[in-house]
Every structure is written in structure tokens, then in C-alpha cells.
Length: 170
Image (cartoon, rainbow, N blue to C red; front, side, top):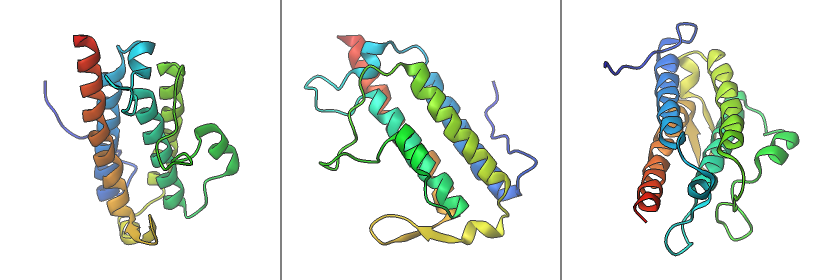
């Protein structure tokens, strides 16, 4: 087996490389969760105080959706906010997710990944230096944002792997 990134040749070179990293990381996430059952998807750890795999999958899709619209320079449309939900609940935590099938969570996330690919197709390498509003009044470049999508996914994949391993050891 040979590991490599496979940039989309229709994208600008650096954009394509960054997108390929996101795509590769997303495929790894899907392989990680593909064999999980509903009990594992909804599991919140031994004390019920962790984010479940379902919450984390939904969270990743919502964060990536927001990056799609930062790239586009537009607000997230209300109908998509209705489908994907808020970033955080009233207490500043990830909204609870329970009983949503893995297939549905991944189907929603697949749609976000497709929107992300389409947004990247319209970027030039020079666009990567464009600054967009981020969090708490700060800004970020599109270059950092696209990298962050992959990095953020890898971070939560570690949590999902821990939840999965722990649940299967019980």
C-alpha cells in the first residue's frame, strides 16, 4: 500500500494540495466509524460526560459548513442552519445528538464535503491569503482555514477512536 495525497487537477496547485489533505482525512474518519453501531455512536463515555461520536460527527460537519461559507464570503443560509443545527447549545457545549443513524450523519457530512470541494474549485492560490472573520473577533486566512478543517478532524478522530476502543473493551 502506498500513501499519498491526490490533488484535484482542476484546482490551483496549493488549493488542491490542501483540499486533498481534507479529503484524505475525511476518508480516514469514515473508515474509523464505518463499523460502529448505534449504541457506540450515542455512547458518551463511562460517566456520560463526554461528547459522543454522533455529536462529534455533527460538530465537524457544522464547522466545515461554516468554513464553506467563509470561503464563499457569505453567511450560512438559514435552511442549512436548520438542517445542521448550531455550533453550540445555550451552555456553550456541543448540542446533544442521540438516535441519529450513522448513515444519516455521514450523508449530511458528505453534502458538506461536496460543497467544500465546489468552493475550492473556485479558489486561486492567491485567494488563500484572503482573510475572513473567524472566532471572537479574530480573522484567519483561507489557507489556515482549509488546513484547520483537516487538523480539527484529526483531533476529534482521536476522541472517537478512544470512545470506540473503550466501548468495545466493556
